[in-house]
Length: 118
Image (cartoon, rainbow, N blue to C red; front, top):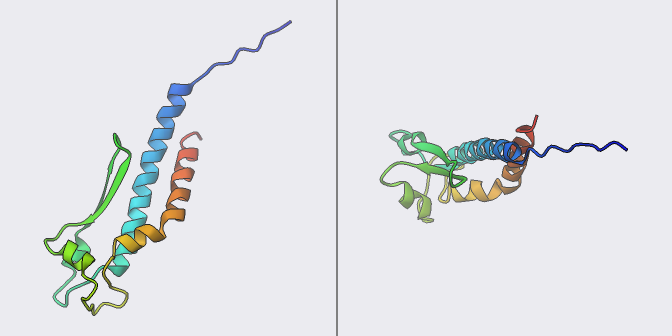
């Protein structure tokens, strides 16, 4: 009788999955920023708010952040009464693209986690 030997590589698999998940989070955050850029208001004097969009991933917490870095970014995001001259610009320029991206974001995450094993 012969015995088959099974070797478990759990730690290596887990490390690869974490790398894939981090890569997926980064891509999802960029996807959200791309959508937000289409909706972010632009002042007649220029696109300071639009140009301040950034993404960041904290691998230890497995969290991604998408933000705009101007003193008035939050006011522009939250004030539903402002009127914007840029076609498609509106309040909730971050929240709406994030909510709309959930299915696509999960797909991006899954693809990157699976891809980490190839």
